[in-house]
Image (cartoon, rainbow, N blue to C red; front, side, top):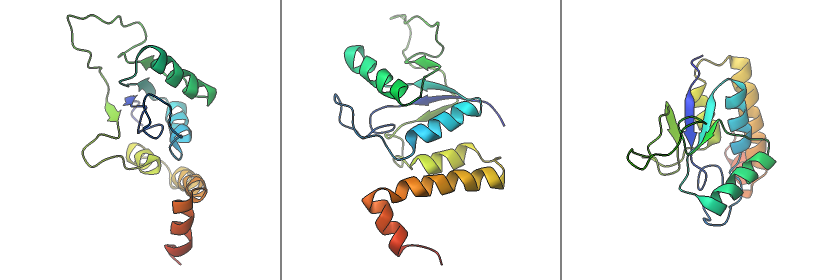
Length: 148
């Protein structure tokens, strides 16, 4: 598996978009991100947030067991230089504002883990579906859209 640097947006991606407040966490966001870290990927929090709002987002993630390789930087030691672009260097960007919108964390995990074993993939998707059923829409989908 190729280890990647993955930039992840916060509002609308990790949590529902309620900026400047912190929205409800998206289904399976933290489980997916922690699984990506466990697989050796570097995660960068890449967000519009700054100051107090950024500190709150970082603390929110840390309270759920997620710490980032870097925050709004390409690497931890980077110092922002106003003479250069703020654009960061990453192999992949996960953001709700992508063309086509946000596909969901289960789909993102599958896109990144194309070489995962069938057992690992099945285990992850099973856990994702259990989490999804805990929501009203997911439960209705489970009841009426099952493949039997």
